[in-house]
Length: 418
Ligand code: RNT
Ligand code: ZN
Image (cartoon, rainbow, N blue to C red; front, side, top):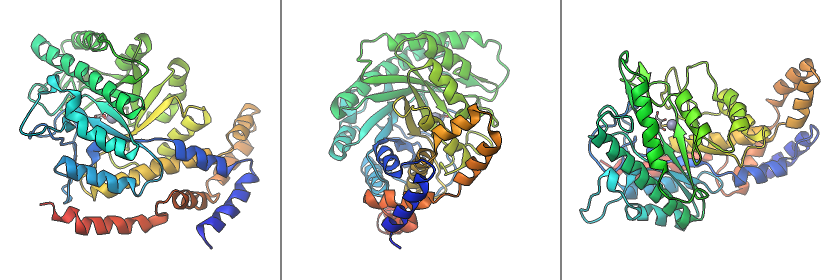
């Protein structure tokens, strides 16, 4: 049977439970996922040679890592040839591209240092998101925006402000809003003597960053919380309470939840609905924490599906920006990207193929016996037939056939990088 024939038979089955597969495919095609640039080079960036700091870590040394902007862009092109739809690229400030020996420190970055990225995105019809980089820098030794050293703190405030200007440039050039995510690694390894001081300084720094004049309809500044980092086990300045309260009480900033940034039994899928009642918009970093914030590749697993369900059944596709955040250096990095992107799409499709209205009605009428039965039966509906057809009809390989492209790319391109 062809993919199309299998799709047609699946369409009938889904129709019998009230699900319109054609509509689901159309919706899925329109969802832009923000693909993080940092999976391609283990969060190295191009503006410095030092190690990755900030309490985050990549592990593994699979060969073929991108070493230059050109290589990173080529790798991204390979990914986008294997993932259906039009997406966004999520850049970090440390991926500035300097020409002819010029250099600008983080507080002096300008739109021109990202011109190459804008050209790359525009040629491909992709959007751009942005992140100031408050780590992997000599001035980010312990604290950044919460630093007791006023000179250091002002340096990072200027960095945040510079990044807003760059984000606005991205939005204006691409014609798509740019989310700009603030995440700082500030924290302490051991028991603090003062938890309030650093948080008060962080709050003031954010106020100063947001005080510059910019177009709030083009740049969505967001704030990412965290529970701990390596070497910052005892205290994180930008905790969940800090970030959610700040975003709830301040104009022009929206919350970002990374599902690796909570205690292991806390689920972001359970937090989304509460956030939606108090925030017009929010951003997600979809990742896979294995025992800690390990940033493993996103799988088609229960929590990813549950997150997608919350976005879809709460009608929040226009309110929640979906970004990926993982970095695995132990496998082919381009394959890691493709697997993660395709899995996020699979999770969204899976959610779009659920008769959500009917299931909600079962819950409201306390028909829990039927609800459990139906939720379980849906799991073995011919989801794969719809997914394969989505890939084929959008011009990308279906099932595992895309992997031949990775093998070829590895042999011809990545293996020559040494
Ligand atoms: C760190 C945060 C943050 C980073 C990226 C590189 O724990 O998740 O989002 O992963 O900015
Ligand atoms: Zn994150």
